Length: 129
Picture: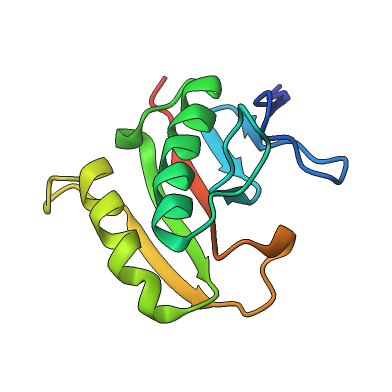
């Protein structure tokens, strides 16, 4: 029988009673991941900083769930301003440098980001056991 396990990252807690991610067997799915500094609990002041911290937080959540970027199969991104992709793509390429081994990604516009965020994402990973 598969058991669900909540993944919690100190400093990245949500304001609602939900974990940062949930894992059942080899499947790990995150909730919203933001450009929040876990040491201060604050969002970075600009889109570039939020994108950088968001990808650092993706790594934190993956690691806590027993995964690496290689296990990621899909990333959904929400951005307040589509022009901020100029900050998103360098972080994406740093995390997924191999053009023949990148996860799928879909980027949506969302003018009403939670917490006043400029960018957020959710990640789906499959962990080989």
